[in-house]
Amino acid sequence: DTIVVGIRASEARPEFVSNHGRLLDYVKAGGTLVVQYQQPDYTQRGLPPLPASGAVRVTDETATVTVLEPTHPAFTTPNAITQADFDGWVQERSLYSFEKFDPQWQSLLEAADPGEAPQRGGELYAKVGKGQYVYSSYAWFRQLPAGVPGAYRMVANLVSLGKK
Image 1 (cartoon, rainbow, N blue to C red):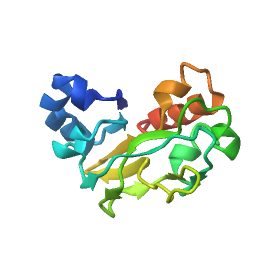
Image 2: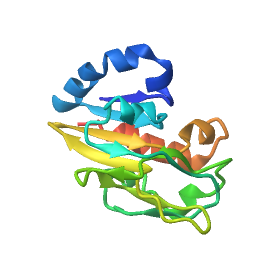
Image 3: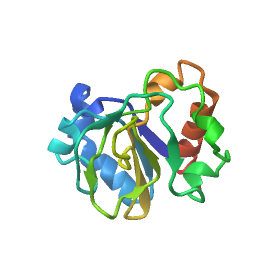
């Protein structure tokens, strides 16, 4: 129901780039694609389904995260996500978030390092054809091995977006 693409796939996995058109066809036909953070080459190659650019980070793992769309299924199904789900994170919040993005993207989360402008390009959702596309620059690859309960709950919700 959902395909999850690992970090840096556009840089390290040539098959991801060469088959990206097939993945977009899958989404347009009703599939769900969750793409974890990618290096700047991801946007430079035109891989996002909608325009996006920039590569900003939130390095403070305790930075406040605001859920911008609390009724979105990414925060309600199967787990009700609360502020406590952002507790206990390690090393950083997000990497290579988009600074600028097409208004058709729906921004789901906001975070900022102390003294920095809020970043809304770290978890974006878009309807593409009959399906859905999520770009998440949040550091799931660090939180899951560290056993952060909220990270497991949130990733479960992202994967569950594809359930019919």
